[in-house]
Length: 444
Image (cartoon, rainbow, N blue to C red):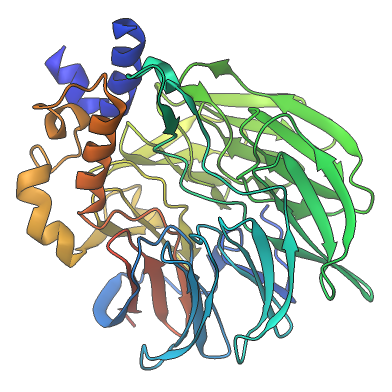
């Protein structure tokens, strides 16, 4: 039993509580979360640190760069614009809530959401507000006595609800729309220039997933454990696909990847799915061994690459059949969505490690760098350099919600990486729970 707990700490936590009680590339629009296939040559590992920029909160948002400026949101409520060359602040924009939404850029405007309940359109050059749109309210997923934790009367936020929906922009001729999900259960389409509402589609629970656009469809999932395919012009449902709803294994946090008429995505139900893009019918599913798939996939050379939680791995799956080609083992949960450039894939893990993996090596050639916090706290937090929920909370009663929150805070102290990387000018950028935006050179 102890060996089982060491390898599947999050799954153990859920069972313990229960038993105690597209890749749609668009040359005009940049999206930090879904556009993660970059130009590159060969295998380029991460080299030396170029600079790091400190915010005053944990970073769950993913960075984006354009015109020598890199942008990122922080839990401190600011969106930051940082000069790529120097790491110096160009401007910052204040909201009244944490920014866990990753930004998108269209022309001279950057779009993002905040837990203050607003989605914003801000000028990329000076940080001035163009418009803001008030949703029905943004919040972490939660409920009283979540998963049977104690005390049963306490309201408990989901400790793994990391993101808000990240907006994407759709351009059709002279028409441009910005689309995103909301904690109020709606999926919104707004005029990108003015913020005026064009349509909204109601789901059954909060939507923190990020939409992906492919041809005439928008694909997005949410906490009702359902993936929706909607007509992008009207917001009308074309089809939906329901995933499982067992306690602890319900919800879609990832965005989809679309390739060759197939929609790929993972869910908290411990499977990774491939669906027919036209009908929504399942083609195959991969059993993730009681491991959530919060990471969004990238597809290259008929291979799907996606991170898993409790199996601590980057998975390489055959895009046609779902058969596992190999898995690259790391030190903790892989919630960071990978990015590729040339023959290299980049991603972070929850222990503060950031990896460069040679895609032509079948998982055998790699490089790793660590946050400073990981170097400082790994010995006292990790078990044999591996994340282990039971080990980190061994002196705590894990039937109590507040004690589980303490364990997560211990993990965050390592500099957990759930931010997804962005590559620009031979530099790779990612955020960390230690509050830093990191800029690393890539080897030439």
